[in-house]
Image 1 (cartoon, rainbow, N blue to C red):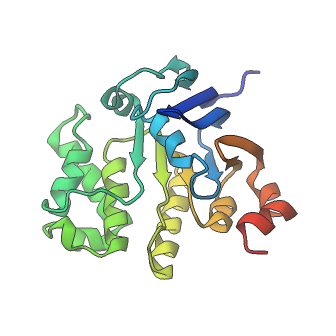
Image 2 (cartoon, rainbow, N blue to C red; image 1 turned 90 degrees about the vertical axis):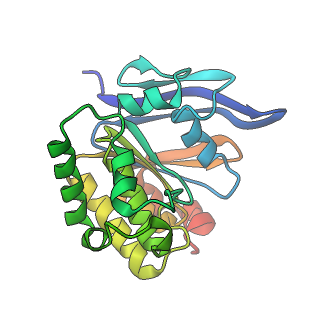
Amino acid sequence: MKDNYMLEIDDLHVYYDNIHALKGISLKIKKGEVVSLIGANGAGKTTTLQTISGLLHPKKGSVKFEDTDITRYPTHVICEKGIAQVPEGRRIFARLPVKDNLKLGSFSINDTSENLEKDRAGFYKIFPRMGERKNQLAGTLSGGEQQMLAMGRALMSRPKLLILDEPSMGLSPLFVKEIFGVIKRLKEDGVTILLVEQNAKMALAIADYAYVLETGKITLEGKAKDLLNNPDIKKAYLGA
């Protein structure tokens, strides 16, 4: 029986001018899985995510989403097909209120305003404080609240695959706990997630499968719980 892979990356090579950033990486994500990609700064994690999203194009290799080769697709088409990315640094629209940031997240959804309003109401249930601040300018929110908003904006596109790039970066422990609580809830709801996260311990604890990326190459992969107990991973990424 064929495995039900939602995303398949095969032999991906990406360059920045003469710099070989990704050196033939391959990874797969099954529908409903949370897959974590861990590695040091400069390993190529964000480059991988940007290539999936169409912001970068590889010199060699392919990206398949639901058996469709999307390697050369423009970003907006990839989004319409069901991939949404929450970028590192959040990149919310600071001069717009919370509710308008969420509306922009649903620009590719062809549905009634009533149903889209239900989507926003659902987001406010996940993040009640965003409901309290729906008329507040996004740029005046705290860092943790902006991360919540960035995740909500992505969820408003009703993604089949949600990509999270360093969702806990720069946040207080309280907000980190809250963000990971939401990731766990999304996992329980069956959302497929690709997670890049500096907190390797939390990322591996919540993931089903994980890949280790070092200087543009996948050097280790396996069930997340196995990597969590791997002595080399503990030494390199878990502070043990």
